[in-house]
Amino acid sequence: MPVRPPLEPPPDTDAGEPSYVDIRHPAYPDSEPALLRFAAIDGDDGDGVDFEVALVACGIITGNTWHSGYIAEMDAGREYVKVDRSTTDVLRGRTYYYFVDEQPPGYKYPVIPSFDHWRFPHGNLPFDWSNITIPQASRSKLKRKIAAQDRDETCRISRHASALEVAHFVPVADEKWFVSNKMDQYVKSSSETQPTEDPTNLITLRRDLHYLFDTRRFTFVPKHDTASQGWSLALHVFSPDDNPDLIPLYHNRSPAPLSGISIEHVFARFAWTIFSDKTLRFFKGVAEYAVFLFDPQAGKMIETKLRSPEVRTSLKIFGSSSRTPSPKKRPRDRSMEDDQFWADEEEDDVSVASDWEPPRGRRRKRSWDGFNSDSPPELVQSFISTESDRSESQDGVAERSEVEVRPHDSPDAAAIRHYTAPGKITRSDVMDRPRKRVDMGPTRDES
Image 1 (cartoon, rainbow, N blue to C red):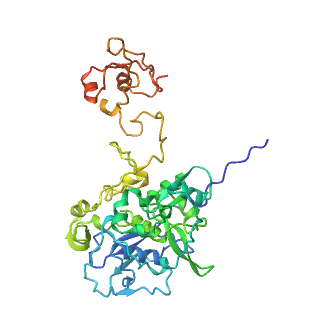
Image 2: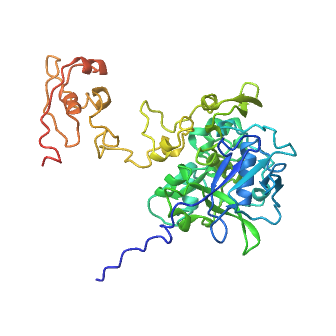
């Protein structure tokens, strides 16, 4: 039979690093970082950023001020000129300024530093978001992820039916934020004990797209469709620098038909995506910043002044809700490690779920293979099992059983399984015993 040729690569993946559009706070000097930075990939020539995306993002980080705030640019005489919203679809300049209300340029309006401190604007969505209608899903007795998979059937971006996973709009790790902001009013089941698992907060994605979604590479936003002259949800890419193929493949692309999803949860996801130091760059400077923080004890927003190190320690107020409690924490994805300022508060689906490793069974690699280390972990980290090989003799003393030396075991792990003793063996018991070295044979490099 004929063999088909390989697939063609995505178009324009070698276009180089995109340029950027900065939105600045007018009250801070040019030596301070921009308030927000967007990749200039909108417009017919891919040289700007969607006006509404920029405006709403500015409104989110300043306490939901999109109705009263505005974007301005500086003219040749260093005067601020308001950008006409009615005639501007794309911001094509390189530097703009965001103003709150009619305050003077020197007013240091406060900025929200993290998703934890942002409060959801019930009944006050931006104009473009309030024009989006997602139809209800068909009635179903299924719940949670099974219901979402049954509803969507295929990936809602690629429409592929293989390697599917269910992603959350508001991550499981932010369930305390979800509850504090009364987001359960938008869920389908009022009896749901874990409201972030409600189908209205879930979407089916292909595994690689789930990963990119959870590392803030893109999200869903309303875009004004020039063909239909209406508003519809489309993908917007936020971090294309290390994933250039995302732009031609997915930027400004409509998803497959959606149903049974809350637009409020989608909007919350947009806000969650903004709170990353690749987009919100403001607090990396040396100035004293006016900051908006939520005080959970008082139940209200407070304004204060903090410097960058103090902002960092204030990012998290709710803590993380883990999907599967475990004393071990998965190693972070490289993209999350790059997101240093928000590293302490980033706990999304990627960091709490086994999306990229086999969830059960024997590991395919040694436990230290994924780390940049020349030596294996300590014995306590290699501890696997001590009870599975235990066998009792007639006098109650455990006998040594034949050890199975597995190709991917560390010598210490094999030694632990080799040793058996009566009763339950604790970690301290194992640590006190002399380690038995097991000849593993030649390594892969030596053979």
